Image 1: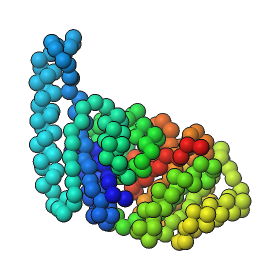
Image 2: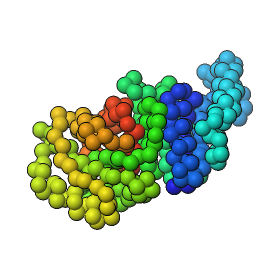
Image 3: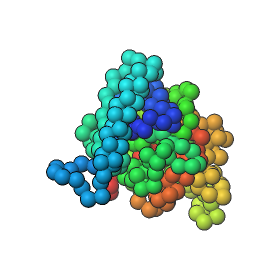
Length: 280
């Protein structure tokens, strides 16, 4: 892992993400790229209908404030000694994030969340969040609270272990190998999605061995809902981070489509890393 992208709105939640990204960058000797998205009207000549001089002035004020906020962020002690780049983009959050990720060959996107009331200051609300988490081909790591010790020695990997998971799971394996982490693989079962534990455990065991995991355990965990089950299981095993692969609309993929994506990420007290399943 050499390049990490951190979309920011300079809130305390985005600051938590910046600190986490900095810790990871320091461990991997990676470069940090911060991006802030500003929505300012652009035009070639004249004035766009509906855009007033006040709108333009407000846009310029926002741009000036963003530059000031970046200057303050770059002065933070936790960024000392880290290779850091900053950029201000104009347009949609999702589009700008994807553009920067592709431009710089990003290996990981780190984003802050705002708990049960949504993403920070509407910066990552609704479709933007869904698109980044669901559609990004790059792993996305989200966190709500400040992570005091991002050692990630205990990793939960929640999945249905269906076809299409293996390739993307290897992105998670790279991180678990680096941190010498123990991986708890878990399949959540509910009344509406029941699976006998014996055959499932065999599938998970074969999956883990095929992917070269050495330090792991397999679990089948029953809960009222998948979201609740993942959080309860992670707490039970004292996990440091939750990981999963998003894929289409099958199995656990149902969990990571639409608003349920945000529900899981917001409800978890732990960092959550998602990786989009590779196209078949």
